[in-house]
Image 1 (cartoon, one colour):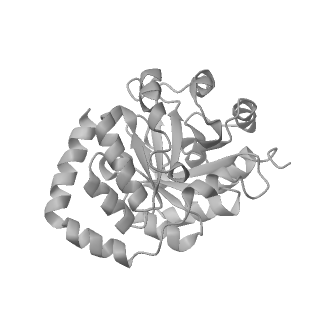
Image 2: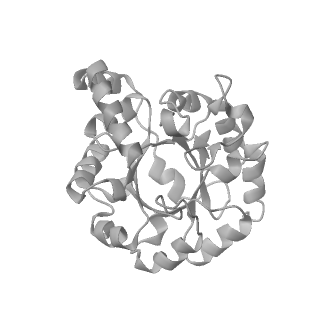
Image 3: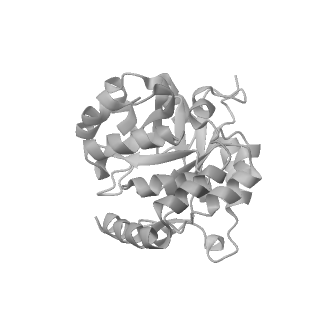
Length: 272
């Protein structure tokens, strides 16, 4: 995968610029992480579904999501504030710059603007990136099973827990779900969420039914996150009827003129 090749090149350059020792010193200066796991599993604000709302400028498949997201004027903190004011339980922030237009600094800008925990969404394949994530203020990180061997995944999960960050462990294929299922919740159950990505990263095809077909193979639906392809309150209802009460929504919201208002519309029939 070209993205992973580029990511490993970025990591090598990053290690030359910032040592583990320097990252450790930066982590020591950070405030303790916000509890991402609790924020999305307790279903606050009177909603029946917790939404992890994503700050996303572009994607390899769609390009720039809206013209006004180009350039230095993009304000991730304003998007996040709109999400917070309209019912988001947590924020996901793309930090890959080359392919998604993100930046690591966006995490702290968002945290300075809202009290919600923030997930760093990137291609994490090296322990150095976890230290980098916590130094940048991340409260949670995404680990993509398709990009990691089982031993790499477990090592990263252990370090994430040591750094007090929640892991969102993402799978797409049934084969990978069966591979990682025995390890979900390792090394501590309150630091781990399982995500099912409805987007096939090989074809970019999105199918919400993908989660619905796989949910019976998940031992603890309470900690399951459905990712991609969620566009309506009816989608949330379909997922909830199958026991899925956490979703990650990004591109649908970011395509709208007002992402916060779009989130409010998504949740409009969710209030009990």
